[in-house]
Length: 276
Image (cartoon, rainbow, N blue to C red; front, top):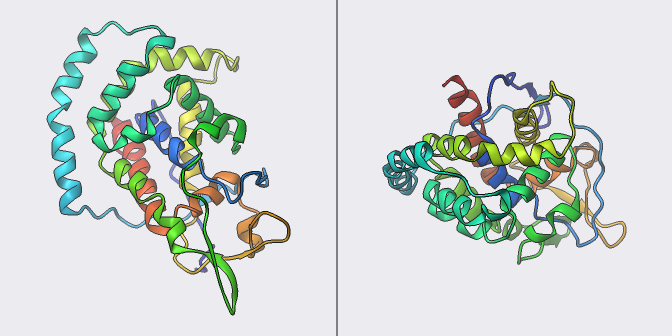
């Protein structure tokens, strides 16, 4: 198989417990650009996805998971007892619960109207779109970095490293605790979803399973990725990459290891917890 050959994804079904993970992934994936005014192609991605290597847990990951697992019983008890705040007043409680899932997530939860903003971005992603107006608040502090040698421009390793903390935070998320948070806040997610005016047969979980599918469709590329700069913006030199969906192109910009980690986590949740 060539490096751009793909395999078909497993079909999603049932209620998707990966919702909160997808929201946090969108917080990181949705917020990086080649240039401030970059306008990526909105071409729909193909129906197939690259095979994902197994997730290898390191000692620090195991310890982090132990910490959040210790909070699971508390989260489940709160799920049974808590009266949810209004959507507009939900930021503090949602942030608190997500930090219990993974303490490393804090920096991606510093905005206001968390649930509203992330569900809107998830809806965009489910349609293969990346709309800058919905993601300005997520723009990273460090810019995209390109290097150049005699062979031309290419994505710098330093550019990938901007997302190491995001990948580590997502990797540390405990699956059971994530599901508990989703169940607790689902009524507020439904309030945002109702504003999209979808047909009755289209459910909240549909936008998240489709957003997850977009994330899983991105290829993992370990080779050097060549760039061109025909104007003020960088583009992929390989037309096959440049023709990918905006979400796939943004996943590529995380770097291969970070993409693998994030895809593995989404796959674990979609393939495993959906059976509960």
